[in-house]
Image 1 (spheres, rainbow, N blue to C red):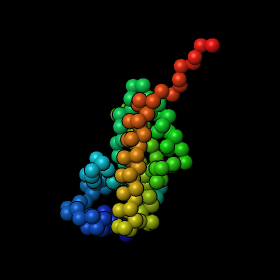
Image 2: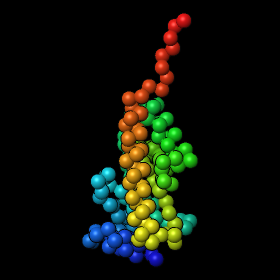
Image 3: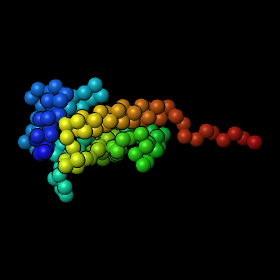
Image 4: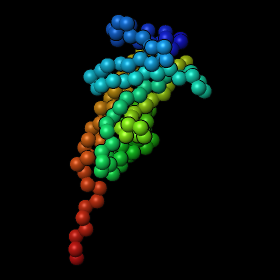
Length: 141
């Protein structure tokens, strides 16, 4: 199945009329959790990339970064996705790759659903971490 065939079959499965990649192989899925970009990658192997913006990196990012990086360790609760910070936008971004040869419409829809759940979970972790204090003040003895 080609990338274009996968996108067409997925669009049909989830009822998105006219959903197709642009000339660069990119399509954007509008969902309840925000935009999820779907990209065609060909180097070194044919694969599909899901990408979404998670949240701005807060000015006092220590707790948020710690929570995000803990969740990213070994893909705990991430369903195979990985978290990064985009240096240009200063935003957390979530990404996930899959080999095109391993996907069909059913498995791709399941991947998108797991990715969206990870996106929601990561946003909650980062937002919750903003109010945490990493270290309690030391009491004087």
